Length: 344
Image (cartoon, rainbow, N blue to C red; front, side, top):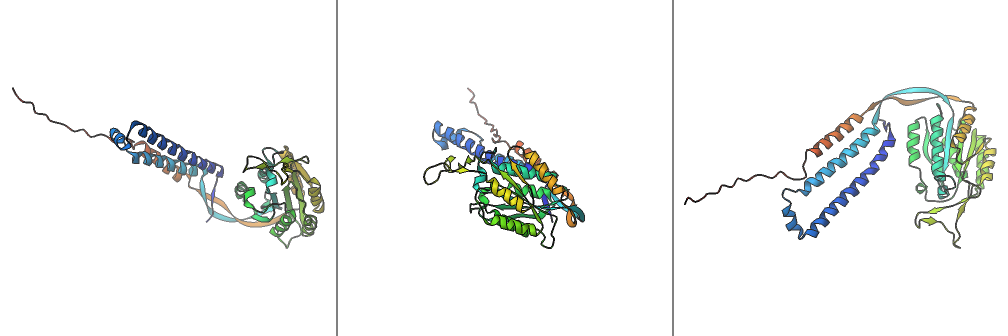
C-alpha cells in the first residue's frame, strides 16, 4: 500500500494549530483573570447564569479538529491503486548535500543551506526520467533517500534536511563520495552522475582519491560551491549573535573553491558557483546530465491513485456545523411562579 499527499505543501498549515492552541490558552487565562478581579471566583461564576466552561472547551476542540482535517483534505491523501512496470531512459543522479552548520552562513541569502535546497528543488523539476537519490553529510555521510523516480518523495525528503540531523560537525566530502558511489549500481560503469553541493570549508584529504575511485566506477562528479571566498560569520542560535572562537574572535566561514574544483576535475565533471543565479546553475547541470549516455531501465511504480480529500473535508465541515449549533451559554428555563393575592 502506497500512501502519499498530492499537495504536501498544505501540511505546513498544521503549524497554525499551535497558534490556535495559544489563542485558546490566552482567552481562558483572560477570562479567569477577569473573574478574579470581580471577586470570589465561585460566587462570581454563579452570576453568569447558564455559562458552561465545558461547552467553551468543546467548541474549541471542534474548531481545532476541523482545522486539522481541513488541512489534511487540502493536502489530498492518496493511495496507489494500480502498479505498472514503466520503461524509462535516463541517468542515475545522486545529490550529496552538505548540512554542516557552516551552511547556515548568510553570505548567500537567506542562507547557504536554504539556497542549496532551492537549487535541488528546481533541478528535480527539470529532471526527465532520471532517477534521483539524496545523500546528506557533515562530519559523517548518510544515504537519506535511495535512487527513485518519485520526484514528489524527493522533495518531501528535502524539506526534512537540517544541520541537526547529523550531530558530528565537519565536511566529510570524501565519505559523502563513498556513500554516493555505493548508492549506484556497481555492475554499471556509466549512466551515473554525482552532484556535490558544499562550501568545502574543511579540507578533506581523502576527497580527491575517492573522487578518482568513483570515476573509475563510472561516476561523473559535478560540484557546486555555495558561499563566498570572503566568508561570512556564523549565527549562534543559543546567543542570538555570531559564533566566536576560544580567543573571542568571530568565526568566519569561507568557501573553499579550490577543493571543489579539484574534486570536479578528478571526477571529469563541472564546477559551478552558486550565488544568486540559481536558474543558471540548474540549467548548466541539466545540460551536463542530458549530454551523458542514457540507459533504459524498468521500474514498478504506481500510475493511478485514489484520492480521499473529500472524506477529510466532509469531516471538517461537519465539525464546524456542530460547533455552530453548540451555544456557549445554556438556555435558561422559565419557572412560572403563581402568587395568591388576598381578597380584602
